[in-house]
Image (cartoon, rainbow, N blue to C red):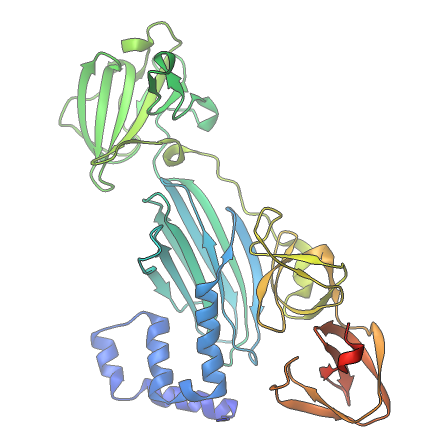
Length: 446
């Protein structure tokens, strides 16, 4: 096993950055994390234990991200001595704008790699890197443009750097609301509602407002003003940037002419009840159409309800520390929330490393590297002994609850060692001021 001291490792990374490939990287820049991996490979650090652990942590995070409901705010920490990475999968609705903010605190010059991927619904297609950075403060904004596509954010610091981080995911509308002075509360008939006794379905939303209320452009585009049987006085607005058309129907009158170029928020017409809406109260029928698809649900495009992500609160006190479960069969979940999939049941007094906190839930890593979320109320600090272990024969104390893990000490028998928690047939004990894992005899294992 290769072992490299931290200062030597930092020096090797600096040399790698100045090597022959540095000029090529300037001419053909790579995403920051990919360029950093190339530096590790150039310095042969990917073959060391710490290098392998760092690469493996990044791969695990991307392969099994936490499944998070929107909006979300989470805070956490990376320890310098433990290579780690975290990732989240989120699923905004088509037409929503997703905003991701990353903020971190670390020593000057520390890089925190963040990468935002689009993951297609077709699992045969590989995730696509959309944006990336290596800054302690980064913001990404995108518009969800395909049904079934989800997005994954991965965070990972460079080797041997301690970083405290905060991530926020929020959604909002990608288009301006189409009726002046109104918001989502004015929508009273939604996509898919039956029409004409079930002969057809509603291909838009209806936004109610007094006659003569200005109808506004949801985006920049080119207008077409006209009349038709169902919609009465209508405007189509070609949103060229997004490759779609916005449809405004039942207008009382036009405010633009065909061919006019308009900007977001310009007045296109005024609320009325023309066409087949003459027997209903004045309202705007609003729709979104895509070439090759026809009508799509417009509500997420204009839904003005933006809920701020809840703050983690006092739960952050356990972040970066060891904790243990206080309940029998505590539910480890794939994301922070009761609705997230259950990963497994965790026995009482199981030791976990707390890596993040999100509104009543803690992101944890079990000793076997399984990650997930536990309710904050199911954990307590692993700072006081819960029992004492009688050791009758000399036994090694290991760095992890694994027979292949390196020794960190030796229990000389006979002795009574304080126990701080458990995992499988191992107990976490303290020997000569250092903690480590002691294997219990098979006949006495819980």
